[in-house]
Image 1 (cartoon, helix red, strand yellow):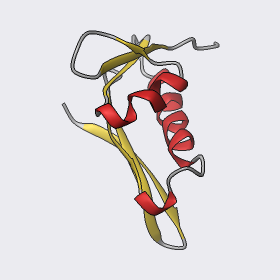
Image 2 (image 1 turned 30 degrees about the horizontal axis):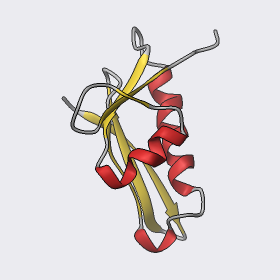
Image 3 (image 1 turned 135 degrees about the horizontal axis):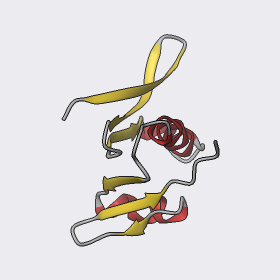
Length: 95
């Protein structure tokens, strides 16, 4: 399924990016390793969730997180959904 991407750049250099599909799956979220721990990952996640929440008929955001990032997504409200790092977050959208 094709994905849309959000890109974070600073002074013309890409420092992070992440995608989402039209059915609410988050894909390929990453921040440049030397810039992690500054809130950029959360900023990128929230930007993608804002876009996913606008999609018609989508009430959950889903992703498959590598083991080292499961705790990050859990802190953001994602819950395990099956095995293999699959997680989801119910989206509450205000009209």
